[in-house]
Each structure stands twice: as structure tokens, then as C-alpha cells.
Length: 212
Ligand SMILES: [Zn+2]
View 1 (cartoon, rainbow, N blue to C red):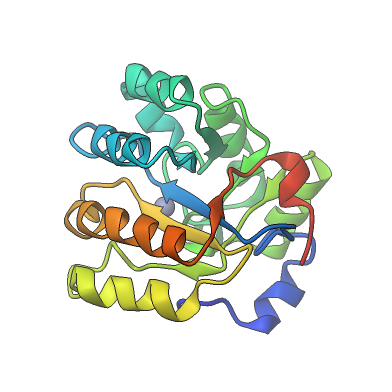
View 2: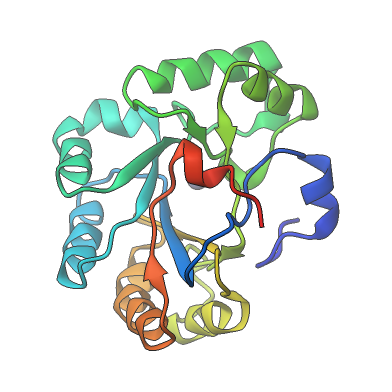
């Protein structure tokens, strides 16, 4: 299981993946998985705009196909995007060929070589195939667990306080499941990071590869 912070062994296992890019200045990389979805993504975009913060959205291809205008809105507002497979598949459940076809199918809708595997689960063969085909696999440094309905916004905030550090890639979700927590926590989290002197960065193929 992935805990709030990935264990060292996983970093060794998925060598070459991105967990926490090196940053010259104190930087936080906010990321949002599973969208775009109506009734959530726009709210998140509005919060980010209010604070003038840019983030990276790891989108599900199927959602982009269904809601192209929402996806365009993410780009129009200056955020970065990444591939979160076509229909949120778990690598452990499928063959490498199937996985790669699913990634390529999503890429038709999401112009990005950054890939975040759903659930953080991929087989070594899938990880290798992604690297071979020029993709950059992005995991995270802090998982907020905003999707966990048993956690209150206060508990999610506590995870953010405990684990965030410079270079942290922080995972939120713009899914309906996470809506209650994400919308409550996001303004507070941004204000917390700003008070601590962090700037916000977006992920790109170049900066993702700067290891810390
Ligand atoms: Zn996901």
C-alpha cells in the first residue's frame, strides 16, 4: 500500500520515475487526478485563479473525450496536463500491451508525455515500456487522501502539514468522490504554502526530470 509518503523501496523499484523534482526555490507542485468532471473541475480552476496558482492536471482520457470544453478550460487558464490512462486502469490487472494501448488512446486526447499511473500501480514491464516509448512517469511526494470519505478536511490538512517540503508533488483529485474535501481544503492549503514561502510550479518533461 502507498502511504502518504512513498517508501524508499518503491523509489528504487521504479527507477527513473519522478517523485520530488529538485527546485532552486521552495516549490510545491499541486496536481489533480481523475478529471475533468463537471461540478468539480471548474470549482478547482476558480480557486486556483483566485490565488493565481498554476497546477498540473492528470486527466482520464475518457473524461476528456466526454468533456472537451472542460479540458480546454484547464489549458486556457494556463495549467499543465498529464495522462492518467484512458479509463483509469490499474496496471496490475492488465497486460503491458493493453496498458500501452490504453495510454496511447488517452494521448489522442491529452497532448502530454507525462504519465501518472492510476493507484500508483504498474508492473515493472509496463514501467519499462513507458520509459522506452519516451514517457515520463510521475508519482508523488505527498498524497493528501482527499478522496477518503472517512477523513475530514481537517485531517487532510494535517497530512499536508506533516509531509509537505520543497519539491513536493502533492496529489489532490478533481473527482466527485473527493469533492467535499478538496474544495474545503484547497484554499487553506494554498494559503498555508504561501505563508511558508513556497512558490507553485507546474510539471513539465524538463523539470520533472530534475531529481532531488
Ligand atoms: Zn486516479
